[in-house]
Image (cartoon, rainbow, N blue to C red; front, side, top):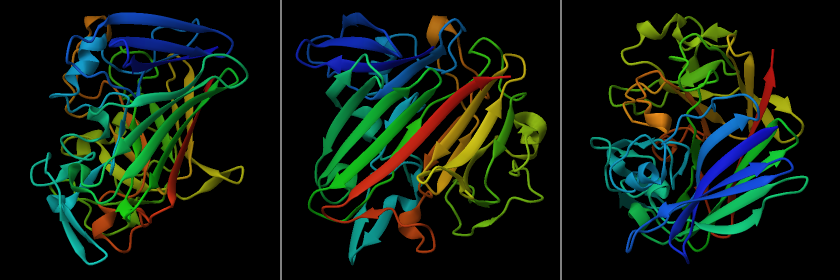
Length: 355
C-alpha cells in the first residue's frame, strides 16, 4: 500500500497537521501549535512510503519546526510546489508584451523558484480533502496577486495530490491567469532516495532519462539558449547508468534541464525517467506532460531532517518536471506564457514497483 503525508494547516485553529492519504485508510496527526501570529502554510509533500517498507523514500524535515523555517531562510524547497516560475530567470528580469519586468533576485543576480517569497514560502489553503475512497486526494489553492514577486497579473494556483491504486500517485498543478498575461512554470521539488534516508548517498542508484537533448548553462546555471545532444557528455542517461558513474566530471554534480523526447503514456503523458535502487529493489517511474525535467543531485544539501539525520550532498535526487528554465528570455524555448482566462496545466504521474 502507498502512503503519502502532506504537510498543511488548519488556518482557523492555527494548528499544523500531517495528513496521511492511504488507499483505503486515513490517519491524521496534529502537531504543535504554529504559535500566535505565525502563519500556517500548505502544499508540501513530506513523506512517501510503501506500507511495510521503511524508511520512507522522501528526504524531508522532521517536524513542523522545519517546515515553518522554510518560510524564513531555507533554500532546499523540500517537497514544495515552487513558482510562480520555477527554476531560474536570468538577471531576474524579462519583457512581455512590450513591458519590462524587474524581479527580486534571490540567487545572485538571478531569480530562483519564484523569488524570495515564491510559492514555497506563502500560505496555501486546503480547498478539498478526500481521505478515503477509490482515489484519495487533497487540493491546495493559492491566489497570487498582481505584482507578486514582480510578476504581472493575478494567478489562481492549485495543487492536487491523488492516489491511484496501491502504487501510483499523481500531482496536478494548475495556474489560471485572471487578468494579465504572465509566465507560469510550477514544479514539485521532491527529494528522493529509494533506499531510504539512512542508506547513504544516491550515487549507486540507476537512472534512465528519456531525453536525447539538454539545455546547457553558464557559470550561474542560466541556460545559454542552446538545445544540444546529450551524446558524448556526462548528461547522457538515454541508457540506464548509475548517477555516480560520471558525476565527478561535473564541477558540483547534476543541476540541468533535459528536453524530453516524448515517449507516450496514453494520450496525455510521456515517460520522463526510470530510477532503480538495486539494494532495496525499488523502482520509480516518472511521467509528465511537460517539455522538460530538471535533474538535481542535492549538491549543496546540509539540512537536518527526519530522525535528526543530517543530510549531506548527494543524499537524494530530484527530477523536477517543468518548462525550460529562463524560457521568458529565450524565444526558441517552449513558451510558458499564460494569457488571461487561460489555465496552465502540469501533470506528474509517479509509479512504484519492485524488482
